Image 1 (cartoon, chains in turn green, yellow):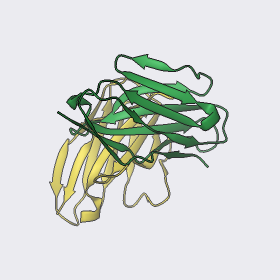
Image 2: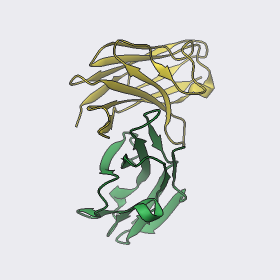
Image 3: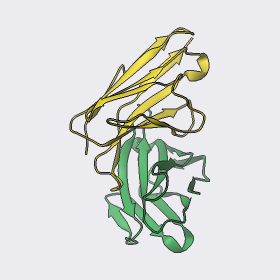
Image 4: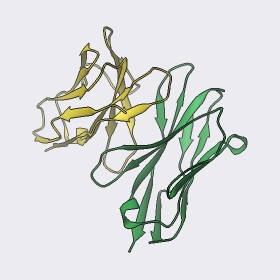
Length: 115
Length: 115
């Protein structure tokens, strides 16, 4: 069975602090994709990153970075020097290419960045 | 990325009525998905809609309650029938441009309130 766990329900940080959002996934597939989406208060889901299972290189995009570790089935997301505009709910998701093909979402982590 | 629009963006409906949500994509896509996001919750897949075939519903969702149409490769509708307050949610249309490539994009959502 496929599953995505985001153990952190809510995190509060002060502006300019670094914050890491955890994501742990379960799948028996060897080929799969992992994603992060941002959902600001407006409600729209914003695609942040996609990573396939064969690419374990970490990625950095501006203040955002992602750490993919297959050994621990984790795909963590770090925001450096957080800003108030980063306040949102962040979802981690998994899609597998075998069996019933669909996307599985975690329960989300609400990030509050305080000024 | 895909440009996805949904109509209406929000609505307030009375118990017992039905609402049809439209999803329009700017280019042809094979797979379209309808998700529901209840207040403060994660995304739950309602059904997968492929053009030319019946929609495939997830456990807990039935065609009589959520009939879906997929008349062509750029358009789909989801109807929420015989609504109750429990149907108050955000309904999201999403598409995958290339099947199996892990590129899921979301529309802006329809915020439904049932009174």
